[in-house]
Length: 118
Image 1 (tube, rainbow, N blue to C red):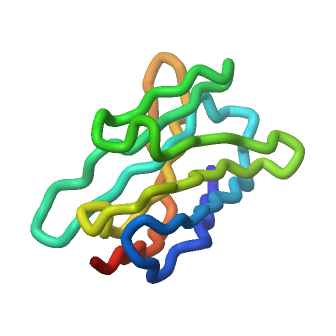
Image 2 (cartoon, helix red, strand yellow; image 1 turned 90 degrees about the horizontal axis):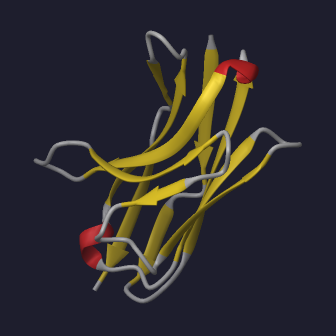
């Protein structure tokens, strides 16, 4: 079992920055990749960014050049640095971890609200 706890959300003006954190605990050695997803009101949950165990990153086109995912292995924590925030970035942001190789399983955090005012 993997437990994910997010923090760092809040209200920020357009053009501002926020950093989200996701602390993982439990069976962390089984994690193959971690990432961030977001869900805006009335919309489906969408991928923001992922990072594999090898350090390979992937970003949604809408956040490339503005968001950066990173990790601190010693703290079992993944970060999402969000710069140049836009009102359309407003959403609940969820931390995600994938375990298992043959049959992948996704774990989710409780979510943290990010609101960008214009």
